[in-house]
Length: 68
Image (cartoon, rainbow, N blue to C red):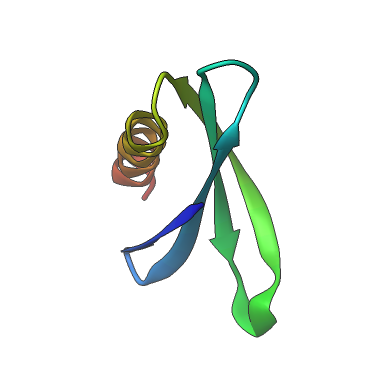
């Protein structure tokens, strides 16, 4: 499953998958020109897919807010 997020003119995908048992893991990827993807270095886990996605998106927003 995935969620697309656009922040500060940049495209990101939050990709989530089951991570053993009832735990989900979400990973943030930035989509570059030409379709290439680059890992942002943000991973989040939670009991549900939505919670993992939300946690990863919150961390991404914090990261970009602190970038200048």
